[in-house]
Image 1 (cartoon, helix red, strand yellow):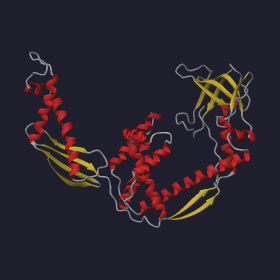
Image 2 (cartoon, one colour):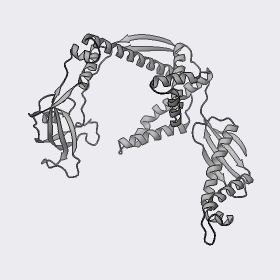
Image 3 (cartoon, helix red, strand yellow):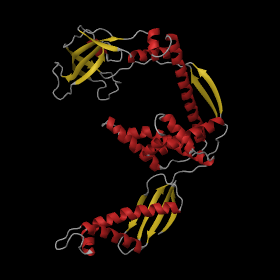
Image 4 (cartoon, one colour):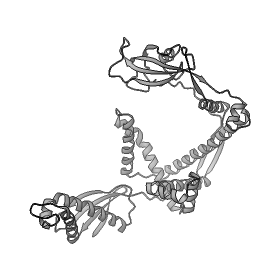
Length: 429
């Protein structure tokens, strides 16, 4: 095999590859022999037909098999020979294939960028740690109350804060259910603030088995674009009314959660939230450091990496929204994808430049923390089989690089009270 490499563009190289005729013919003979073993021809026993007859009858499949085996092998050998670190799958161009002749083609590859990062020392960044206020503690306690809430069926019309289990179906203006509309079963908080006003009213005072017709005028900024500014009619039929039994916030409640009293529980919640905010502040600072270093190291991301991520994101988004505006989605997602890959390439380059590595012992320690009850060797083998082990190693290496950058940065830490915005959440019932 002969191969030469030429520059083709930013992070692109073209590898011209030539395979000798005898290599090509040997692979053709190999494929002919494989098909001959199972071939059936009139007048011949299975596997005994002449090779030339098999070759003629199965040529299209033989040709495909030869190319699908020889081309990737040759590309892999050429990449190793020229010590190229590729970022995306090669693209084959100018393929020439004919029995008895050289196999010639060009493999266009995108290279993984290897930078010489500058400005990694002494980065100045502010670090804001948001203070945990009493309202956040109250919200956390309310969530705990919600998890401990029980629901008891009652034989009376619904009141504020009850739960209405109901069927909901789209209807015409007269209240007759539309035959094409799917009937939905749901639970609604009676008079709940998250409901549209019409549903707030309809869910108060409704009795089991009662049917109500609701005409809903959706606001122009409604989250579902198909309903924004529209008027729709629904039929709501109550199946069951439940009274919420919310546990009282007192010392007994706290003791049920392992705290001596309510004051201690509040203190524990505050401590956990402060630890969480410290971690989040640390992450925000790390990304601010990365952004400053990226600003000093301009480079383009290989287009294949960006396109691959956009295609994957688009495929996931289509599942959630078949009517997705693909062009706008790609436009909005592209800056985030480019930044993600620039970050990945930068951290990889810094790790290489500073010879930072993740040892097997460090990896095993992380595996032990992830699953203390499992055998580390078995967990490692499972993650390696699924391809997740390398991702974990990259994640640990990123942490090591970010810690090194922070240790050399000038970080000015301050604590601030969070400005809380009041929002009214309107949901589709």
